[in-house]
View 1 (spheres, rainbow, N blue to C red):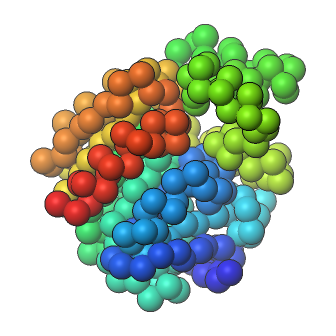
View 2: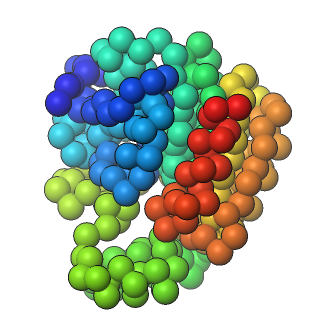
Length: 263
């Protein structure tokens, strides 16, 4: 699989699948491109899909340096597009990937055709932050309990039970298990420091904001904030969905995104 080189020399692993117009899929904090595994085939049936391992995860380089920021990740994505020979692409970013996508669309407007921002936020200074009960659940000393809390923020209990009844134990939205602790801390800090509020009005690409209606991990109230700040953006909530709406509610979310991209 190919590797691009970031401006600072870090190797950036990416993958191309499918054919057609290019579509970049950007995953969440501390997660590799496998975040998209359950749905990538549906997008690759219509587009040349580009998925990326962030620096610090997957098969990308893992520098223990102060080079992790959502704005810097956008520069990394631009480097991947250059290496792949792609001038302009649709971009669909979820969670931290949506934060990176905001910078990509604002700083590289010539590279972004249509933009989808999923389960994301403009950043702490102007966004709606998760509540203290969510923070406490994720900060539990028992790693198993913290992982279970994260899973229940991602998915509804009924869906989790149904998956576990089939014997499934692997969920690629819960973090890259091979990620070193220092890189995990740097990802967390990068996402927490995100603030694209002043840049959002510069986004010129047609924009769709999608969010799970029951998302408390990244509260759904952020969706109208983003849509109101980005010119001519529209927001759509997926009723009953939590943070990983794109996986559990793929039968609703994927057609919604595909329809927007084809408009």
